[in-house]
Length: 271
Image (cartoon, rainbow, N blue to C red; front, side):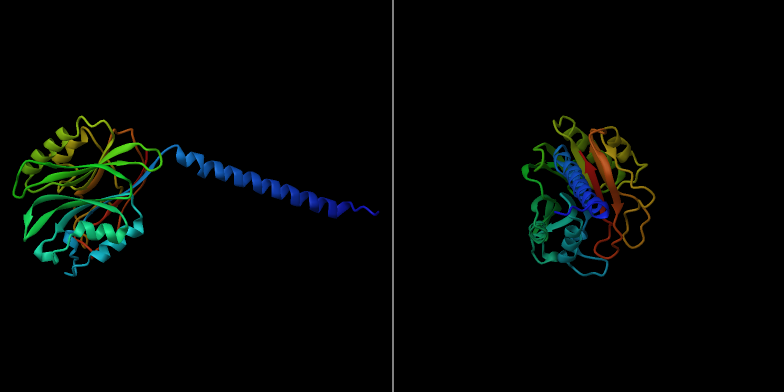
């Protein structure tokens, strides 16, 4: 029988090496994307004042808000200015509607009765919710509360508190509300993330007080959140504690000038 050497043998050898190399690369990638991903959590967070679904074009359009949320694929969403069966928004349970449209669990925290229903804020979650609280804050021009959900990671089983914020109205009222907020979560046995509309700028007493306990995520050069069409101030934030408990993977503001009067704040954290 005639045997072949030279180019054919080397070609076979090279093919074998290539296949082995591919297997090694595939195994390496599997190691990086498999067990490594199981060693910790990433959390995708959105904070958005939705102006009860009414855009700058004066259209009431929850589906537009839901599309924006769904496109970002967040795990946790803090929504401010949400109606629950109020006359001005067609007696719709907006938190439930947005939960259904995005496929996320929803929680609503009422501030006060409003036009036959209630007005407040909402949280949407892709993580399992294990507890919900709506802590009343000191009264001001309007009643206020902080809506908190305790959620469990579907990857590691660890838990965090995710807290929706909408402080209002005067500097004195907001400082009193922030003081109570800090008191409420001072003894939390799990990490706490705040997200929402603080109605306070970075140099304010309100943010200075909260910075004692929470790390506020720096948005970089594109940081102005209000108004959506002509941004001139930074009043929407995401913050967390403990300061060393998370690593910021991504943070950005969305250029969405029409859907609401605020710009959405998106962050992704490694935990």
